Image (cartoon, rainbow, N blue to C red; front, top):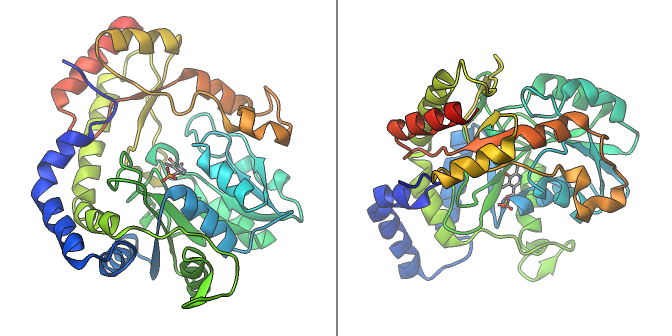
Length: 365
Ligand SMILES: *Cc1c(COP(=O)(O)O)cnc(C)c1O
């Protein structure tokens, strides 16, 4: 039997009727962009995260770009982030005219190395984007201290961490702005592209609302050059349904992750670390293993499909060649990218499948 890396269909089967009801309401209203369903989602998501405002957008990439612009980041500014993330984190920085500045990762958590940030701060540094990679919260306290000391905004990329906690706070709510993607395979996924920012800052929220809608102040008056980054009503309706299940889905992921860690405890692979500040949501369950590509191929031949997040760090991507980085500039990120392997994890994955996957991994390593 085939075990995919993610399985959206088995989840859809469990919520099909709820989804149909909500989606039908959108067709009855025939209001397809923003509107009541999106308002409702913004309110519920803000409450869920424990913040005042949520702004519904068209993707996670747009969320990052709008967050940066709403924080005043623009041409000539520098933004510090990690080289081990999905490309969008860095694209958003370039898209608003700023320069990405990388800080290597901590090899154990895969998140930005908080001890190496300060030396990269210059008078042009306007923001830091920590990424809660794989659903594991970064250590935010030292980042917030730097933000205070140098007057730098903190924009959390929480695209893989819906509902994860840093101590007792929900990630995304801790910096100046939190950015979320609702790409279908994320822990909270729409059925198409969607995203959001969350914040407690009124002026950031208002600016983001204006920027997502062509920089509009009132109808047909545009205060600045904005974007078309509005959330669709259909996605708002779907997200309203799915948000109600998020905590249950995240706890299933936690159970599966702890089973993986238990079964792989005395094996030749390195299982994920959970620092004391973190309650992760296991968007991905990532191990480190020698001879990774062979193991991945052999698992595939047994119909177990794994992923690599990410095989080429951003500083070595052809699209960012102009930044002038080279091999060995960020040795921890490069070393990790050669060893990491993402195992199948999703709330509907069965425990016996985890047994089967780990048995195969142990045999192969
Ligand atoms: C998915 C993701 C994004 C981008 O989100 P999209 O909705 O696909 O635009 C940004 N950052 C990280 C870390 C992601 O995983």
